[in-house]
Length: 332
Ligand code: NAD
Ligand code: LMR
Image (cartoon, rainbow, N blue to C red; front, top):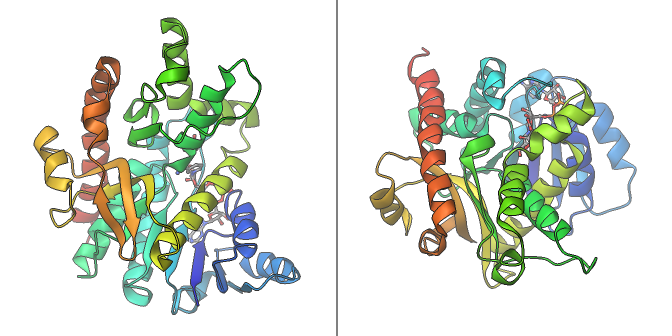
């Protein structure tokens, strides 16, 4: 029995993500919550003949929506319009995330929490601060979803192939955070492919992964940001996490944004390299408890340029993290 709640289920990401989750072979119940339309979305999905039971909840029903949930996924909040940075979303989304974190602390304190809402570099710290204040923070159970960056890296790197056939590139990673310069694609590890790419094309490829979100925002021309590719990315992360939790897959390693708690194997090694950073996306070994350990070997595999990019990323990341932490600390 595995119950998952989607908070922000009626939105551009929430709807396709809920559809994919309705098809999941690993879930038994889906709880859809939004400030609008969640009951409609749930009724619609409930007509699909899969084994996942779906229930919708209105604005004032957060407690019921979260009751007995094992996982909570959060795509609630406003998306970007052309000309905006993810940080510009902070003003509105910080308050939404704080409210939802209070709800999780009260009604689902033991659930795994996956935050999609931007700016991820700040919303995850907000979530952690609220849970810590309420005495229910478990560093093994809070994740910022950065999978879309990896999906983009796999897709764009594939575009440089002339063979035309799709390759999976399991050996590449995207680390750091989830916005512009904080996104650090580690592509040099795909040595056979990468070495064939000319230096100027490599720079363009890295830039495209870092700013892939802008491409979608521009193409949607004011109607929002990535929704379908994001729903896909969240779904593949959730499926992998569920496999790890249920022990049905040997080794599950996923790039995801976590809090560097000293109790997590590898955290102190990361802190030795970056003493000031509290949250970062790195390859994380997932298991029955959620986060099992950090695969720090990646830090030794970076080429010179990737190392330079990571140093730039961490500086900006620290500012984004502090903004989220202070938002909760300075609010009553
Ligand atoms: P959207 O506006 O289409 O949907 C957001 C939904 O959140 C709406 O249905 C809205 O009613 C709901 N909502 C607002 N306040 C709420 C609250 N207090 N409780 C519950 N629901 C609430 O936006 P979208 O395109 O689905 O994007 C959602 C968020 O995800 C944005 O912040 C966007 O920037 C972010 N995003 C993150 C990634 C990533 O890689 N992590 C990728 C794409 C988008
Ligand atoms: C993305 O990477 O597509 C998302 O973070 C949405 C955005 O604002 O670009």
